[in-house]
Amino acid sequence: MDKARINIDITNHAKERYVERIKGIIDKQEIKRYLSTEDEKIVKEINKLYQYSELIYRGQIGGDKTTKDFMLNNDICLVVDNDCIRTIYRINFAFPEPTRLMVINDLKNEIRRLQEEVEEENKLLQEKDLDINTSIKLLELEIKNLQEEIEVKKAEVEANEAIKKANRGNIRLLNRTLQTYAEQLLGNTQYKKDIC
Image (cartoon, rainbow, N blue to C red; front, side, top):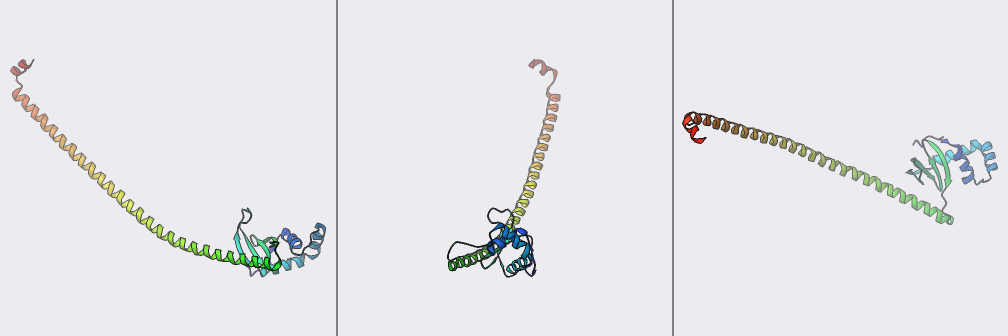
């Protein structure tokens, strides 16, 4: 977001809420009249609030599914989305003024501290992720090498099975030849009559 921009877009809703919540005008007709006669002044005042505000939180608050910037100027919150102020309200805890301001300040400080902690944790997480990703890549490479080695071993097993089968083929051929010669030599008709 470009805070250097002096003028930011402001919705009519934000202008109405400014008049009602910050200026303290609660009558609907009076709000409309004030808006129509003092629009330029309202825009100038809201822009000044924005110019001197600080980003406290970027996120989704209260069930809203859209990420917005929550800007604070003392106890006034400006809700900004897409370089446009959507609404304005005063932070009110119904405490006496000094306590209310102290609570706002303490919560702002705690939010900042937690944001820094989240940022630091994210950095550590990214570093850990890099180490883990390196480890994963090495393991995947080792798996690939082992799978290649397994494929080589499978090919060796198949080659040995083929040799074994070929060896069996040789012995069958020798046995057939042996049988043929034995039949020729010993299988004369005299013997065949004896076995029948």
